[in-house]
Length: 602
Image (cartoon, rainbow, N blue to C red):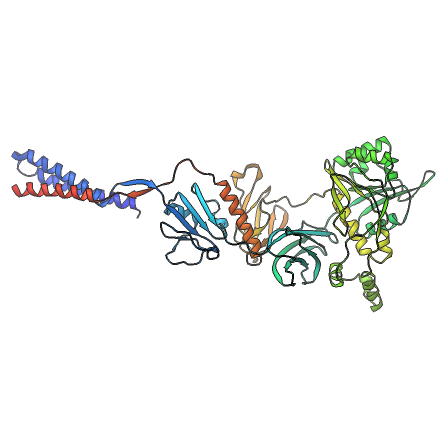
């Protein structure tokens, strides 16, 4: 029973007493009606005064400051002073005199405040939607060393390279390692001064796996680690058209790599006098370009395009086709002009210089990155030894031309981090320049693995974007176990399955309008299966205990956004305060004494 109900029962009881007493008075001597009405009036006044003695009227006064302790509040230093009891959220450790509350919204309802001081690492997802007072102060914990940002790789085709972007904090001269599911290091790089790092790996068979991202200090000790989910999905083979002004070793080994990786390639290399070799004439009309994902030209074949072919290439580029100019020599003025017309202005005299691309690192990392040996080399020990020896050979220097595309994105980077080539977006497509003339030298040196990696990176960057079968997307970068995640783009019935195979339907929130978002509270970490109509979708859910620094930073960022959104109100927060009872008791005593005196006179 709440306070209002108790007050009502008190008022009813007093009213009943007054009615009974009044009836008793009226049943007395009728000759003394005047005195009876005076007594009845005094009884009514006495009952009213007694009610206000028991339930004094409340007044409004500004609410006092409130201190709420959250997760890791014991690591935030000295606790601030509080006018009332310190309130403890469920995640907070016990403190002397603290009072437990189920959530922040309940704490603010029970203890209205004009000033709120939050102590701890931030607000958990449960409390970020609470309506906050106008003055909110936050006493955070000291930043934790480790990974504070992670961008997992996108879905990758088998054999393709994937990239992992992350940021670390609090570790000087740090190194980052990417470990595959077998705990073998597949990449190791130095962490930049600002903490950013990029690592890469090679996707293997179709399926889902979890890599590990480790952060090492200057002494090689593990400071932090975080899981990196990676999903390998089958992809339709890319379709590539190649027009070359002459055959050569670069074209030969490029075509061999494309065939080995499943790319459907059609090559036409001119030999002069109207004769060409390859797979027949490569038609550059609207229909053939629309069926293709990447068009590879050199500077002379670009110049040889007719006006109609150039217009078809320009339109196909805007519609999503990728175009790559592979330099076989310094481009003439006509080739430069056509590149500019396509959206990629080129500068530089085209002079030749040696190019050193990043090396391999140690042999163990290289072997883990390559994965198992090809089946053809396994039957004999000699084949296995020859394969390993070949793929540990040093990388020869390549020839590159002094050509730059100002204002473009780097296509590759050399050993010093300097951009090699570049690409730009043009409509829905991309156009790029690769000023390397002899990547085939790596194949002859036994490094066909690095040759394939180079071309895989270039083709993946420029080729037409492939449509994804997964229409679901989330505004949250990472999903955490026990926290709500929004899944948007729901166009069919959506349900999630737990480890036992039980399904739970996810309902679209009508307030999200055209975004069509549904709320999902994953309870378990790891890969989770969802069914979106007829499509099976997989989502990885992170465990806060497996990546504590990453989760703490995510909570800090979310709390910062929540505090920024809660703007100040124009009116001060007020709270009801019971008034003093003594004036009412004094008035009741006087009235009751007068009633007693009248009764005594009778």
